[in-house]
Image (cartoon, rainbow, N blue to C red; front, side, top):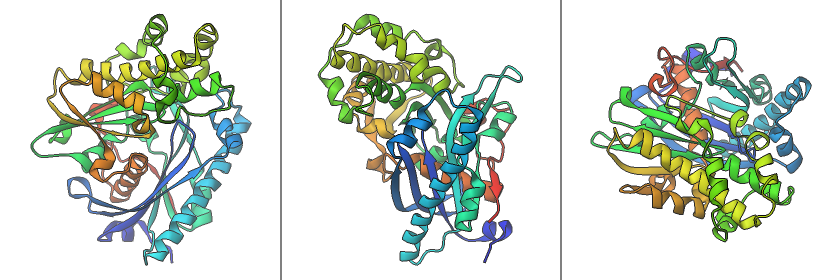
Length: 387
């Protein structure tokens, strides 16, 4: 039986599947969560988590920075079917626990994101067709969360600060949440919602993984645990070059993506021009640039105005030991933890965040953070595709 939006809204608790494909393009992160309430009263319990890796050929399609309109069109439906297949597996996991899923919240996959505020020269595009998910699963789907914030003059990113505030806020202290996915971003979680600060710091795994693919000619897709970088020495002039990008000095609110830090535009020529250096030294320098970019952003834009109690790290970068060592060295005077130590698996935080945003869409609750995105007002995010 199809449940109406009003019925969903009136339920004392909703069981939501959250779906996320990040800019690292490694696969789909899926969670099943129980959500009760909305806004400040919203409570979350994670019930299940799964990852659905992409095969290499499909991953390379998503990583292609020169897709044609035809290719994007076909990928949109193909990815939608993959999201639906992941959803069906999560539904079976829910059934095994006697749970009936109410809703799917899908971030989709960002193909392009242009957050500049110059009239027509801005936009964002997430693929993973919601209609395909709804058709294959029989569930209502909330998707396409970024566009409403951008229509209201915002950057459309980062969108996880609202969920960070719901999950990690404390009445007596301020904490910082750092997510290191393809792009890295901070959320300063203050006791008062209207004082929340969030912004992208620059490249995360997008640069590290991209460098590994280029330097190994596709034989390796990631530097597991940061082992390669740990063996190398920093190339000072290369580090200076990587950190000279104008985005690093830009004041928040700000967001970025593959158009500024994709492999072709940020690393390809730079690595090709430094073939005399060792593989390990090049990886060490790229990893140092990612860590330095994050730490510099913290020291420049957060530390002067906020007394941070501790930093909570999530995303794939939390498992890169070399990167984490850089951060713990450079984020002086503050303790650094992973989100797992707070009951939120490092690779589930974003999927949980979009499950929360989908819940708020159904409840009619604004879930962007204008102080973070630069939007002119709080807005109800997402588009609803009925079952």
